[in-house]
Length: 171
Image (cartoon, rainbow, N blue to C red; front, side, top):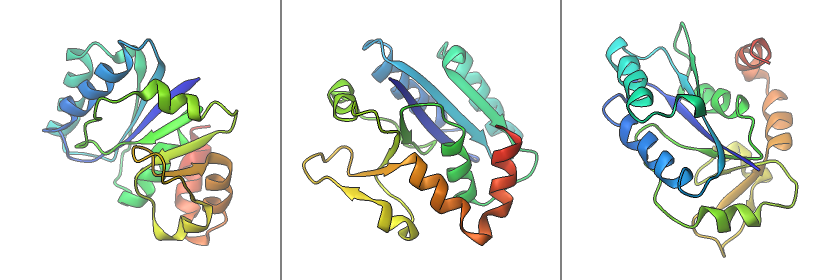
């Protein structure tokens, strides 16, 4: 099972090292199959350099795919674009300044071994509330959203044509 971390990145160079380090510390010792997908939303040059330096310093280049945009898109579009580029069976949306806490991720992944692709996150825009399955017994993964429902719902929204163009150009 591949675990993807989607990181929409924009001018958070001061925090990205800690976030990437926390992901590496969670995944490497447990021998998980994992990737990090980062969409650099036309950040300042110094922040883009900090991202590159963190990846090199932490020796995680083999796990990272970085997409640098040549123009800024909205934060919402960057979230969705980051999610769409992930290859994982399980996808975690992680902000660039939001390190992962150390917990029993293997136990969490066992809960998702039913063969369904989905996105796990702690917050979603209100417009997706009809697709959310709430699982109050698991405080670390409060909401589950299937990837197929996410793409179907998102691409049916008229305001998302710009994002759909970006998505199709990278697939």
